[in-house]
Length: 203
Image (cartoon, rainbow, N blue to C red):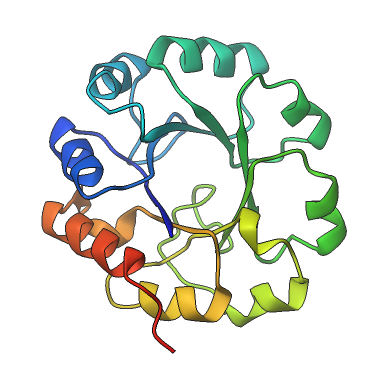
């Protein structure tokens, strides 16, 4: 099971996540309480092992800015969390994760979008993504999409990630607020979340 810990803002959180075998670390470069500057992200990224993918999260950003930040930080993947078109994604010289709200996707949309992974999230609130609320994971199965490209997000935590994996059978899970306490990354929760997500799925 792939695990992405998103909204990383400190070396400590990044270190714990990588030590616990997280597969991806997410840096948010868009308006959010978890937003990080490219300079700060670069300082954290230089200590992340190459085995862990560094993902930049962008919302309706210009192609030039995406490429500039990606090069400056040393990103491995780009996550598009806005209204970016399939043609826009094709111009990005990095593997793409495309986020879709569960309310806005359908099989045909997913089939034409050029990306490494689809990230299915809860409907947005104030900001794109990061609502901290779950959606009905059963709805994923109605889409009949390629599960090998599926990452699910939205309100996941140590209390529900096991059930989410059993229900949606994704390739990966993405968490941000679910491993926080009072809006700050909780190192113990990060450890626990990764351990639970990566354990063999019981029947």
